[in-house]
Image (cartoon, rainbow, N blue to C red; front, side, top):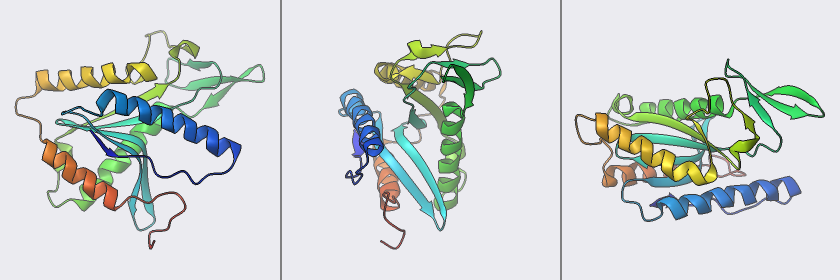
Length: 206
């Protein structure tokens, strides 16, 4: 189920329009994949925080066993992922280092978890749920993988549904108790996050 849609678009520049089109495409895919799901709920684009600290997540997926942070990466040119985890992109005929979107996704996931740990009554609750990340790209064929092969954290847009369902099935297989996030718990969590969401262009007082 979709528990938060994208915010209204307020941009004007060409880059902002291009970015919004990409956001809309991913949101459309998530609605197609999980719009009627009883197990996976989606919040599109979150900026939440307290005081000056803000946690930003492209797409947050909630399921009975935990949270999955989904990041979208455009990859306009060919990319090589080194064996040490560094990402390199071709630019003007040379390879230059780029920030790993996997690292970015994990940092955002941990920032979100820290925020939830600080603001929920049941301390330590989110230490008991799964926290995963996934990076979706338009085409994995532009990626030169490390010698170990493709990374489980990276897939193309059409593979998101399968990757999420595979992770959910894995959680079910190893779980000794039912998932801690029931449908009502997920709705309650989504309502809490929506109440603290700060759309771009608005201050905390607005």
